[in-house]
Image (cartoon, rainbow over all chains, first blue to last red; front, top):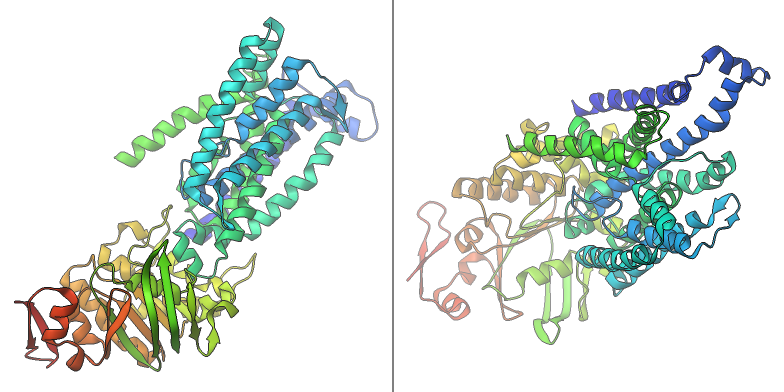
Length: 331
Length: 255
């Protein structure tokens, strides 16, 4: 029963993503004419084509990659921590990134390396540092404790938040503005080079996580059950934790801490097709990508020419949706 | 099938298991009873490979436990825990299908053969009719049979159960044990179940092991083990042993 429905849901997610990729670049503060865009493909340097392919499309690709990564990281953290309310940020990755990014903004140490800005690099370094700390603290005799992880993650989050507050306090007006803007999370115009250099890590992560789908099903029962069904629990926990954290760290470094995607996409898909990860993981990648790119189109067009940070849109959509889910469950 | 040799285990400095040596072989349903804290669950966990013993060894099917990989161990032994829990709302079929994990590799869905094994396990445990229902909506007794089916889907030669019926009403207790009773012959399995229900154990198990303070203090068929002085010494309460009027097996009442 669920099986055939899942195939339709997957197909629907795929079509949505394809439609988003084709149509959303046409929308924006300046609407584009698709004939002009097609003309660009045949070698004519039309301005509409230039905006489509050089400005909007890379930003939409960034949105798709970010949304896909956050959604799938949400799925993995929820299975790993056996908690449907876990998010990619539960273990402190976002606060580590923020600390890194804000340190650069405060110190004014701007440079760029391989197309990545120093803010992005520092944000990624910050997330790696958090991952290592959480791992080191929750590791006992070759295995990690789930409670240890959550406690360590939450505590590190609070600690980093305090450091972030110090940075805010010391910052002048412009720096403060940049800091707040970073924390809101938003997509920006990127070079294709940046996307291409990030892509391998993301794709390999997606593939490895997808390959672990049946393991996540069993991991979400209990540790004892998982072991008795043949899951090498310590190895799988560490692998999943590291990959999901790297994914989160990479996209947060590029786009800031965009909220709710990692929570609502997995929930919605579980509601539609059940919790089997063999369906949930590919579906999250497709829908998470489509959803964030679509939200970003709203962010670009709702108050055009003002470009809202997409993090505001996802949270505005996500918050009420989540409350609705809670009310649904109660009745 | 299960052989323990001079097995010792301690939590911190408190000894839990002391020099346990025993062998459980062939197609039989064996029950492990004893007071709380006697070390029954710990013993079961060590056999299931969930805890390493401090000294001594366990062999399963003639091979030392540490020589098994996780997956090969899961093809040999199944475990029914006291409480099964899932963070998400899986269907009954999905829970049972998890038992096929040790036979599968990545990117692999159930093949026809897997589906047959799953169906057989669900029919034997009388849960096939629940296959599309959410696991969480079943009663405790039905859930426990689903968990048993999931263990059977592993096609194990050894089945370990930790107080599988302790939260069930008498109807579901009886139904569970009637299913369990058929399995050793039908699937040529060795079954070891930890239980607090001495009367159920006496009625259904061919062999009863009694554990106290980390030692096996009695081992044999119910007729010889379920005996007044032994039980009074083990549980430190007065008991009377009667005979079940129909099955002629021992029956205890608190004295």
